[in-house]
Length: 153
Length: 153
DNA sequence: TGCAAATGGTTACATATGTAACTATAACGT
DNA sequence: ACGTTATAGTTACATATGTAACCATTTGCA
Image (cartoon, rainbow over all chains, first blue to last red):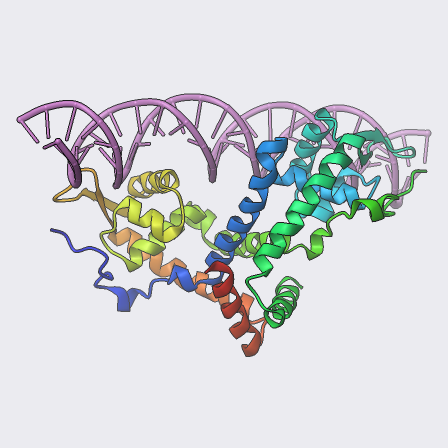
């Protein structure tokens, strides 16, 4: 029977990565787990994707943005935003009109239905975030914020 | 001209999320940025995806795993692993044979070519991780590890 | 003016990913 | 031994995402 789970003989020479201690890998797992947990709350119920929800969240805060501005604020690329908007407008959650002085730009805002959905989803999202952060004490929370700031800056 | 960038009038009642302070969102951006930076180092050069690289990294450490065991160790689902393996075997980077006592199982290991590539990519990945962590001081690094442990546990 | 370059946005294509159904083999209980 | 159930892995389909090419409009400047 073949040897199993035994480190490869050549380990020392080859210095393989230890994925479970490798920051990019750990972040990726953590991020996916958390985002998916939150998305599970609303994806089925409202038939909406994470990217669409992000667009709505931005429009809830900043009324009248153009698609490009939405892209900036969500860190999505313009194609992804265009697609999300197509679905959101189709579903009657976002209103799209044309900018007065520039016919290329759209002017975007949530519809009444969009607001209704937003007001149901936003508290759920916040609650999930609290659940995650509940695993940390106040000091750890503060460090986390600080660390994220430094890593992203 | 339409008002722009002004918070929506109904902000108070609707309590929109502030994406830039929302943990799941921040993690997602950070994780994607870092993973993509590393992937840029090898994707073009070796024509390999992040998932394929992860499979190779695991096989570099644990010789003779089955596909299911690879899936466990990479936190990928079995379909993703199956697809990654198909490409890796095709490209001559991974060797697949059948388990002695169980014809369902595969027995996987890196080929010589797989090792060569591994030995070029692994140091680059580690170097990128160091670049990221260089933004933090020793204390912050220690907290980050501790926080990730708690969030994932 | 008027024409090249830039910008906002969409479309088209290729590739990636998730879910469910499927095949083959093995394990289990009678 | 034998039918049921579980497991390893692949295939098929639908959906998502990234890249490049594209149209329309606007800007900059000769």
